[in-house]
Length: 200
Image 1: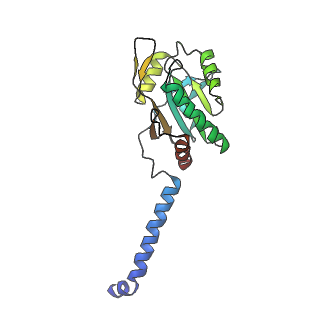
Image 2: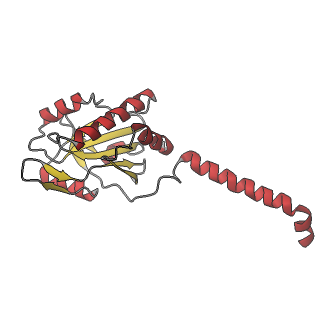
Image 3: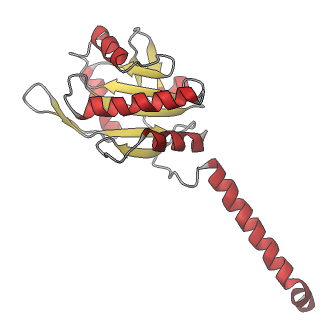
């Protein structure tokens, strides 16, 4: 054994390094090594702007976006939904929207965000209903699901809400792989789409 190591030790070391390098490249090609497991995404069932039931289970096998907002929000919500509009455009260019990726924007203010109001709001962002679904449900349930995702919502006493502004990236198996701060001015549509491609 000693003689084998003396004669072929260098070749063995090179071979092992090649195997390790190959595994590293393979893992990074899938992207899964770069996006940590942040736990199982809570399931939900809401209705879309056509009154149809939509759940997380409906899009199993696809990469998902989950975002909580309210349509009367004067600042961060429209800014973040506009970012998702950019994401939608890039996904369409890559033929990924609907087939590989589904986005969910969920209101936690269903009393004011009626089906008609939500439909008009979605239209304002040119939302493609096949790949970007604007959803609503009962207020208590909506707030509970938001909280399950770690989004605290509090009435501000002036007809609005104080809330955390995060976008969640969920993989095909229903695991949260990234939480983006929607208030981060450095966050780009390119970054989100890149991560989606890594998971696809």
